[in-house]
Image (cartoon, rainbow, N blue to C red; front, top):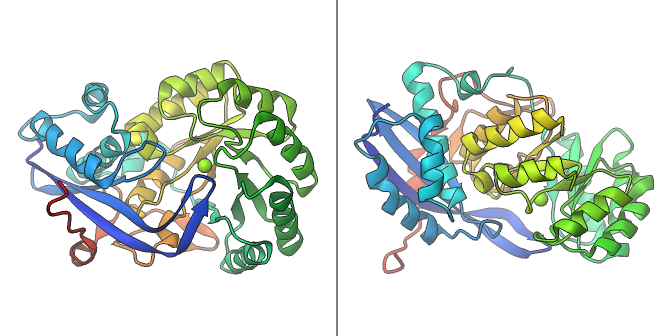
Length: 364
Ligand SMILES: [Mg+2]
């Protein structure tokens, strides 16, 4: 497909409430919406400013601006060219994700196919969780009740407030929602390996499905130790940013599961590469998100449906925003459903893009 133009639109949308995890707090989600034109169709993608890949709105805009000559006016094959692009954008996986998702969307519209048809798989409802940030025990329980009443069947509790306080919050949620709701916890690197092992022992009776990223991002040895010495499955998130690390995690059994996020691994192409590794090693995992809009969540949903190895879906960041810039994803009967329209199946509200467009004059 020939790329006629590449445009970036930085937007800032307030969350419904302040979101706090072990690594920080934020009220506003910043995203860069990527728009590509190709042979008369428009494809949309989403890059997120985030602390995991250390990309800011400014760095994403700069990366894609510099990248423009590599792609505009050229004929591209996403899967063939991606490796090269990944080399040109080495410190910008989220920027590449925005581009990759937009290209998939355009390709689908050109060929009248949904992204899922390219990836292979079945269009099924996605049992996404809702995430609960750091808050008091009673607020945690209140949020859990609200989400379960809305139909969600899985809750992810962000921990890292302190070992016993975290355990008390998880116990209280289990008591509130009963045994039919999945509970997951995410420490976002808050603990030492020893603390993590104690935490897992104390959480065993709460029947949680897994603990995500208990130790520091680069503590590979510590992560492996926790995985070996606990019965609760351990999921690697921040530690896995590319297919190479995913392969190492699987090969050396450093963690039991992997959390794929499109913004960490360069989009659907990088995500699929990790999925293929997980399939090869028979490792299960999750597709997650990082404060993105529903455009990115739709892409993650297509990826989720492309494999049985993605057992869990943490595709809820659009629910946490005070406005939705695109329609096409539906939450029904406790599950998220993608549209079967071509591409991502999303319709972008360009008036909302104007409304939330960031004024970065003088900053770039
Ligand atoms: Mg995580």
